[in-house]
Amino acid sequence: MKRNTLVLIVVLCILAIFAWAGWANWEYRKQAAEKRAASAAAQGELVAANPGDTPQYVSTLKGKPAPDFTLEDLAGKKVSLASYKGRAVLINFWATWCGPCKIETPWLVELRNQYAAQGFEVLGISTEGDDLQPSDKEAWAKQKIAIAKFVKEEKMPYPVLINGDSLSKPYGGLDAMPTSFYVDRAGNVVAVQLGITSKDDMEANIRKALGTITKPAAVEYLFPEQISVPVGKSSPVALHFRIREGLHINSHTPREDYLIPTVFSIPESSGVRLESATYPVGTDFTLPVDPSTKLIVYSGEFKIDARIIATRGDHLVEAKLRYQACDQNACLPPKTITVPIDVVGK
Image 1: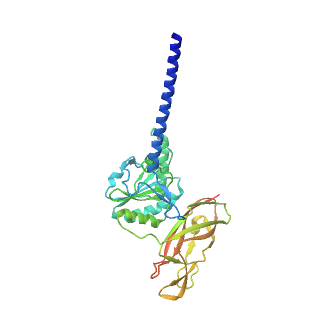
Image 2 (image 1 turned 90 degrees about the horizontal axis):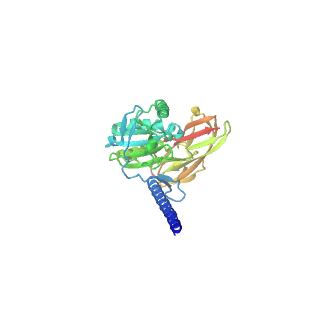
């Protein structure tokens, strides 16, 4: 009898353990699912406005207050986002190992100096992805040296803060560098940019944060941002652009001498040589006021097929596209935009 009782107690204990383990496992999975849902809600996604369009990054923070934070600068001084309320702020997450960051930093410096008097500031937040522990003083010291070197080389006049990785969750993951958040005077996020964009786009977002509306650029560079090519060999690269709706630009070979052609170029000192560039044929266009004159123009999206020769190394090329845009009634002044390409010669 005593033995049966003992066996029954053991069986009940085992059943209780299994029941507890099952409940604990369910609770763990429930909490994990809630964490994933919370993380997904904070992150943005790539969305195409229309079928066939290039996907654009859409952040769930757009239109909402920018999450507040307090980080240290290189001197150990604490700097908070809240202290900039009433000013427009560009929160730029970057890293010392990020090639596109090095391309856009001179633009940030120039734009910051241009709009500072209007109440604009850049907060450059180093986000190295090292996941350093607070107690690892030696690693932090090495990281600060690398950051300080970058800041000195790029002559960055704005506040540079460290430990951007600690803001990964509230700012949607920070999965790629650079990532920029444009914050208006009321502290709300008005634009988010994942990866590098054109200087014109950056300026447009700054003006939006300041409350100054500006028209988008007539021509936008789409991609690629980075390419790898064999050293010393002629290599193809397809450069994609988009022209603003309602506008066209002259082709590379306009019919009239007085018309400014579209021309792509690469600076000689960039470590990359432009061997050739093949432009689209273009389409015929007739002005309503002068049906007898036919122009050759580009509109919508177009592609330039270039061939380049690169030396060994990572070359942050600031290529140029010169064009003149017009609508049906008037022409805009000629303009040259920067075409940033990170060319890796292997």
